[in-house]
Length: 477
Image 1 (cartoon, helix red, strand yellow):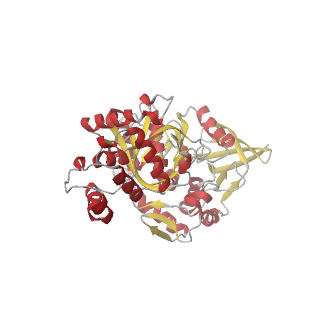
Image 2: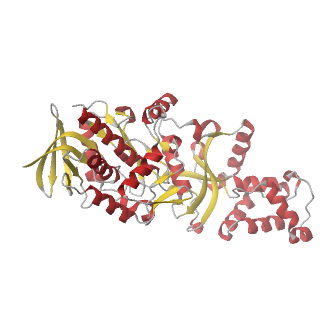
Image 3: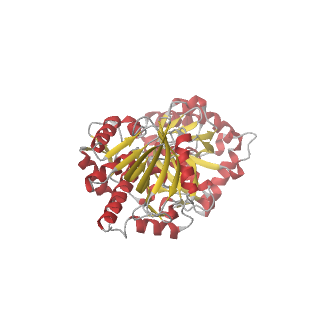
């Protein structure tokens, strides 16, 4: 058996592991660092980030953009972030920007989404990797960690490196193996099992930032992109809203909006999981009753399916169009003036909805594929069109429902929700409460950010804080 002694062993050569190796070399260049990864190359997931352009960070960093299964109530949530930000004394965004500048990356700001100016995730991965390659930082690829043992002042790692056994003895141990999405799950699961064997509490991994499987799935709309406001209905009349573009697919919905809501959906399915109040809105009692009647009348969309306990997603197909916008369009349009009898009332409930006006408005407001589907549905929703008004039509188009059946799997997810329970770590430096000189960073934590650079920011931030903690301990040993 080959043996290796080092000061710091990092399990995982992804974004967090590479960043930690860079930070440690910068702060304490004399430390001997070993980075072990089961893949044949470093940073495979990092090299694909942001569709290959690599969204590094976001100028709109806020704590409510993060999700966890570890928060059971508001007290858990508030306590975690109070410690995470050291009672608001720390600036995550500025620190992460400074990190990339030290690596030698010029930041490009595109609507608050920050990218490397060269717009290449692979080039960024290579640049970060090159910055880590020094005489005291050693990489061991195709290296699978089989077990971990805690000794008096060190940790012993048993691993397999290119089919040969390897024993690693280290003073500091850092887990940065990533989540269970888009990875070699068998190899990554070994790291999770090793942590469990050390009695570290874990949360089961679920796909997050992932496409939604919906019913109906509208195969005719496959490939259609549409700007909407989407509302995920929760219990007690609460909902979570996201604005942006969705992409219709054969299984349901893709796009940033649906992927973010998929993470909330996973949280909502898990019992006793706290979703921050800042993320939620609430319908009034009157609005709830109106919506219930609306959904009841639409049950023909889900034959042989009982939607009583369904998770509804409401799409506002007229996002950013107000009632006044619609009325102005009708009154100013020549066809409406000459063919349709519309009065000058500002009360949309009094504007009579004829078949001609319905067809005219749908053709003006919706893509043709979607228009055809809406017209078919309205024939069943309103068998007698004379009972409908313009107000009724706009309500329908602003509350077009889908039922969420599930999400796609971890294989398709951008990240995974779950991992090391947040109660098991110290949020100030990401050290494990039960194991001295042992840390967890990046996606192995049960902490997931929205699309827009938030997960890469977490990987970098945790690496920075872990390196600072190790440096502090080295100075006081």
